[in-house]
Length: 336
Ligand SMILES: C[S@@+](CC[C@H](N)C(=O)[O-])C[C@H]1O[C@@H](n2cnc3c(N)ncnc32)[C@H](O)[C@@H]1O
Image (tube, rainbow, N blue to C red):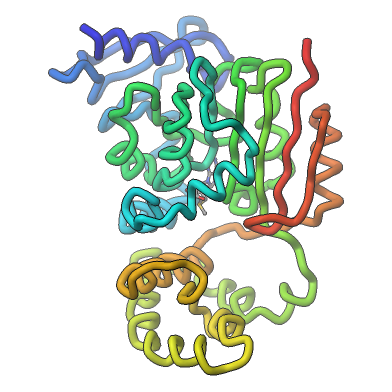
């Protein structure tokens, strides 16, 4: 059975997050499509067990500090997908940030913090074997979009204890994620050990700008909203963005620096930036307003700090500069 073989094959990418040994399927049988819907993985050495639920191996509890992202990405499972919007925003960002070739057949790629999986879609399009991980139950949304592809394995786990093999992956990608983890430096340093010698790491992270940081209302509003029940906050963002949508459109068009004004009013308005129909702009705005107010952690970094981390991780051919999400960083593990 091809599907069963695939599932067993997937074990070669995983490792026990506690002792780094191999895992085996302990309980559960593959369904008619050959995939394991529910079951259990077990470490061959320390005998720790990890459930498989809804086809996804779970190495952390389903609910955790990142649950607002679980809600966000299950509500907006397709909003930012190129294959849904018809524009190539994610494709452009993925290949421009990584500088990886379009054909990565025969290579392995680890994506950390995949959210709904708009970049998993891009990674899978290269033909690489993609292991895509997220801490939140956003993995369930990603599974619906990408999980049935033969070259994608989706797992729920944390960057702090990645349940995958070390010195193994040709490519490691972590974009849109690091600022949302409690210890950004530790998160960054957890990535490189999983690269094989000569492998390439790409990250991005919000850029620290003291002026913007002090005077952006978002920063102050977040003191309250990051503690709110995510469902309640989402309902608030939805109502607020819909109620002000006409006004923010007018501001965007007629007021100098209108987009900045909207940003101060907590509205992520991309009209005039992306070529989308209005209803998609509205969805995108609700998503991004919630995204900016809900995360428990939001800690931007300076370029100098990021450069220092790349050096500390022992990476070479390092490039750190202003980019899509603030700062983009690339580096390679030295060849063996
Ligand atoms: C803003 S979203 C970005 C998702 C995706 N990379 C994108 O750009 O569309 C940040 C993601 O980081 C994940 N995340 C937060 N802490 C994490 C951790 N400790 N380990 C792995 N992922 C984490 C969240 O669950 C969330 O899905």
